Amino acid sequence: MLSFNNIKKSYTTGDVTVAALKGVSANIRKGETVALCGPSGSGKSTLLNICGLLDDQYEGDIWLNNSPIPKNKNDLTQIRREKLGFIFQRYNLIPVMSVLENIEYPLLMLDMNKRQRMDQVIEIAHKVGLKDHISKRPDQLSGGQQQRVAIARALVKRPEIVIADEPTANLDTSTANMVIDLMRDLGNDMGSTFIVATHDHRMTDRCHRVLDLADGMLQEVQPQLDTRKAS
Ligand SMILES: Nc1ncnc2c1ncn2[C@@H]1O[C@H](COP(=O)(O)OP(=O)(O)OP(=O)(O)O)[C@@H](O)[C@H]1O
Image (cartoon, rainbow, N blue to C red):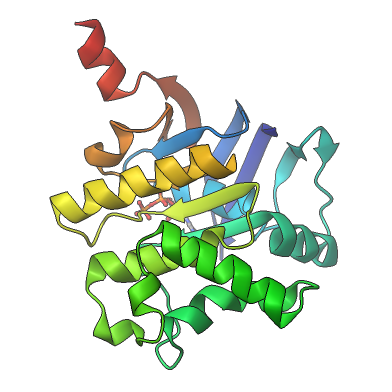
């Protein structure tokens, strides 16, 4: 579904060049939840930005549903709007908008009328357990509720791929577990593929696959849960 092949990316500052990705490849199947792990500076954000079509300055190719992803900004923006959703560590909700308006926001860029937008907003608000909170502002919600709004906002357009950057880093354990289960259930339900940069074992334990980045190179490791089951 999403394949990336021999991706390389360097950053140059003055005379110093850092090779952030040194040729990474993977095939990610539809509906998989994939954790992207690795120590600080190993290249997670760099790879997430490339997979999220936020960066077109790299070597190698990306394929989505067997079609090559073009490397020009207009095409990338279009594909991103239609097919990708994003979840961030700090939720990134718009403080002056209600829950309903925050969730609706990505749909405003698509060709949909108000009625169609509201149908999808209400459906996803219901699925994430927020239908009684849709008129509230983000600052009237707990951290876990705010992350659920962010998940609803990422999923409302039924994206093929959801890119998440440390989505549980600010949450306590029980809220984090709830958020992880919600992401996984919604992913299964809607067939969305999740690529999640995380240091959080609560998250990697629940993912289908774990890809580990070290010094710009990628290797697949067994999820902790499978290892425990096997032992
Ligand atoms: N804009 C930039 N300019 C120069 N170097 C950069 C830039 N962005 C990242 N780097 C370097 O590229 C390497 C990979 O960085 P990246 O942010 O992708 O790592 P990361 O695994 O996401 O780290 P963290 O977990 O700390 O966010 C690091 O050595 C970093 O210093």
